[in-house]
Length: 359
Image 1 (spheres, helix red, strand yellow):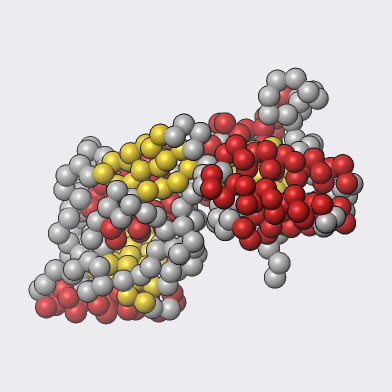
Image 2 (cartoon, one colour):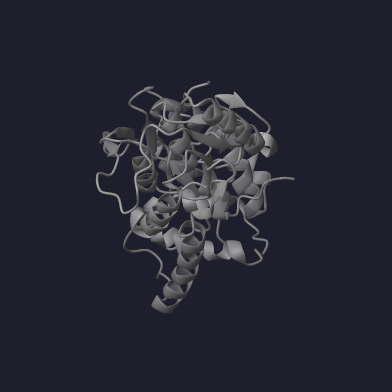
């Protein structure tokens, strides 16, 4: 089935950190939950979107060495009249997404459209929507974000053999997720080993990642750096010293289940735990998105999510973009839990610690 590039719930999670900076765009994303009308476009609208995309891509894309290649490809396609033949907004958004990703594959890059005109990014220009319109749409979007992100803990239970099981599907900022993670870790503190299920993880907030990893180490630990193209500065992410829940510690075995549906911040958690040799990863390679993005207006009806930051692990010096996180033990995602339970029970029965990295 052809993927529609009207914004979906996972993309809310991917860019939530930039909501405040991009609210004129976010205020229109409520349309993803209602039927989208067909939006006819003319050549002028198409060219405006293409020019806007190239401008914003040049300014913000996190890998500057790819920018000239992307611009040259889009201009060539434009000169060939490829885009002039597109008369539907959704089709143009999909075409531009595909074309950019054919030169610079990046999981967090996409072009989308709004049936309603988007307000300008800066002062001046057309009159923005009324305050009532803004509040109505903003409140709707924020409710969806809250639903997706504020309920990250799907299941907490104890399996046979005193094995803990924790299923999580998102990383909200600590002020939202902190109490949920603390309650879960309190419940799991007395288990002998833990299976963490991230096979359907939608992504989220780096600070939420750092908070949860903090439960699995015994001392302050540097986890990941985020380099921002706009500033040229890397922000270091460290574990949290004071936790509201019981620390699981660095000794008891942890296994993490993954699949191609393990995305973005979920991948950051898995990649970091693997690099720290704090967990054994079981399943199939993950989605492969390590470049956080934010939304930019590129035309009256078009916007683009452009990756403008890059995760850099201080241990590996790299990240999981494109390749995903590679499991230590390969397993079909629907069989990964069985594999993990069997492995963990055998190791606990033998009385030995479960080594990370491929044991």
